[in-house]
Image 1: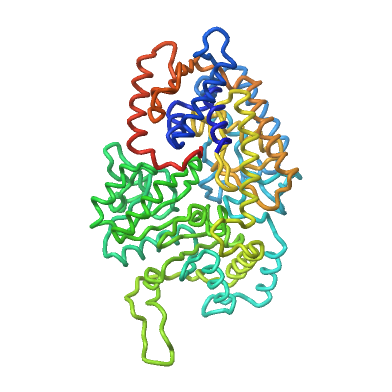
Image 2: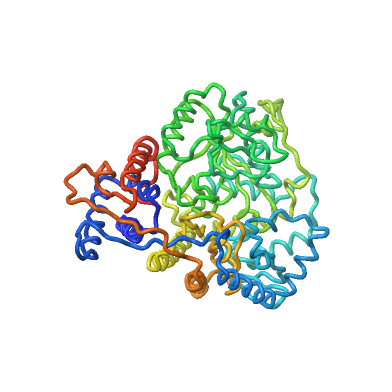
Length: 584
């Protein structure tokens, strides 16, 4: 755990972490680790301070606000626009002309008026291994991972062979194929679920899982958590209002659907009481165990308590494993955290590049889709009532072929470890490579005092600006990364695959740090305010009270900041004991 303590200490000393996050990080530690962190902070402070042994003054940088661009900054953006147009002229021409007929909801994501000439999408001509190639002849190291689909890179040989073989046999959409049975059995073996079914997308998988939960319980309400993403169905698109009410997320989305959802704060232990108090009307609890938008939140203790509560109240716990499934571990986040959900939804990786979704779980729930098993040679019949499931392409033989190929490859690489509980398959090595890469990039950000953090979980990593999620400087960074040969995604979620070589990983490190340095040198980060870190005279006080051990005070208004810390302290004590110890 010392690496985690070192990481937290570096961020606090460098002011590369805000007050709230510092307090959260501290509370995630055990009592011994809290004491170690305080000692380390004190030691670092004593080593660096000159006159006052309990005071260190550090400059804090912040990203430029797009509303306050200087002439020099706008001139640099204009220069980049010209360079990018020269870099990818055919892609720009396609993106411009294609708007007439193609409706593309992604083209406006994070669009900035002052730099929109940098934000057109590329036209690809080829994808192979860890690389993408565009219409203008440029080659990129791909970190988009096709939004989490690829874990073995583009066009792995075993996928191409599966597609070619199936295309020769045709792909009838009605009836069974032998591969269908093999795939279902292998899926259940790897994930440790009893039964599974195929859907046409991840969105559909979640929608059906909710329907199964309601059918099983006869209740209506579904609990979801703020910050999670569960696809595009109206049945899960809601946010939490200021008074705790559930509100429809946007235009065309029905408030009536939102009112069937209970939106809670993820990781907040206190909010478990809301689930307990409303158990009589809750059909199920839907969780994205690692939120793709906030991968630094890894609330192990919260998930453990949630599992206990849902078992006690006999309500199904549903894990949305679209991102974590087969990536964090061969058994997904369930295997990684050793928490078994009643129902789990999957997509992306097991589709092998084909559009698909899956639902797997305990037979008592999955039987509601088909009535359960029965014998054709006696008078037995399905013994359960059924809820409606349908879809023309749910079992398309082309996607079954790629799924079988992916699952076979996963099992092959997990030889001797598939039934172990330690998640020791190939994902473990890939996860560690991703972690080490993030550590190196974060060290660079700390050294330069930039308000940027690489958040990482398994082989997922995300660039987060601590002073704003979707500001101009973040978008410029992504554009520079692309111009330096690293293909990015508007979502900001990136992935390593088994196709990335050590050289590719070093390229990722070099491009991200070089691009950030360019923006720093061009004046897109500036000093915020001088911040003092006041450390305690001794650590004889209770380590459980962070307000008595580490304080962040502004030179201009100490009392206001102390009040803020007191509020944060109370928040931490009530709802953040749940976070996985030592994880940022």
